[in-house]
Image (cartoon, rainbow, N blue to C red; front, side, top):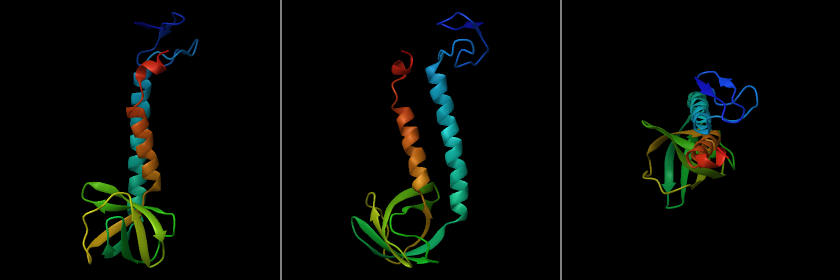
Length: 146
């Protein structure tokens, strides 16, 4: 049996919040639950995003930008892009010039060559999920228990 440390009420198995007083019983369990929920939401978004990807060919690449020819034109200035790899969707950067010929300010240098084909997709929502997961990973559990 498990009891609330604040009010002493009996708790159901796997409870993270006391139903009587609302005290948080297990902050780590709550964070683990949130982490798994966010991860599942991210995976669902990936499936949606992959249905709407666009083929592109690398026209020019430098250390901080890449120019791509997209077919069909889809991306506009300010869009956050990713590219599809066998390991999933990797962040690429932010569109600084949109249309059929797209210039992307790179998040970090990538290993691509002129003429290489890429599959592009909008990735802004995935960046948001990654930030949430990172915040959970870096949360000091002792703060939640006070």
